[in-house]
Each structure stands twice: as C-alpha cells, then as structure tokens.
Length: 107
Image (cartoon, rainbow, N blue to C red; front, side):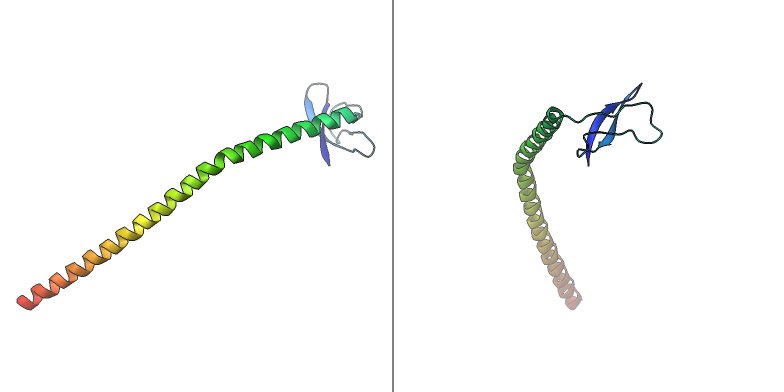
C-alpha cells in the first residue's frame, strides 16, 4: 500500500492510498478531509522522487565503498600487528623463563 499526502483543516498528514479506487480515505478519528483522487501525474511524481532518492542512495554507497575497503585493510593490518606483538610477547616470556631456570641452577 502506498502513502498519499492528504490534508486536514490544520495539518498535513499521510494516509494509505487505495490505487485501485484512486482514493485515500481518512482514518477513523482524524479531522475533516475529503477523498483525494490519486492522479497519474501524482503517481509519476512520487515514482520519480523515489527513483531520485534511490540514485542518491546508490551514489552514497559508491562513495562509501572505498572508505569501507580502506577501513577493512587497516583492521587487517592491525590484527597482523597484534599477532606479531603476541608472538613477540610469547618469545620474551619464554626467554624470561629460561633465564629464571638458568639462575636457579646457578644458585
């Protein structure tokens, strides 16, 4: 179901449009409004606006794609550095343990 802009006495609101009958009836409890005809021109304008919004969204996605790839590359590099740092820490820990053993044998 599409959304059609209709007006009440004091504000604009959105009501579901029935494109089969070409009308949009006010929901219960809403202020005064008459049935609004859904014209072909109105539908075309809504579709064009929607298409324009989709195009802008696609352009934004295209612009963000390289940035996302760069972030992923940086994350991968960071994880590699963390792995190297962990290996270095393990190596230092192993050497410290060997030094402690050597000292204990000397005493």
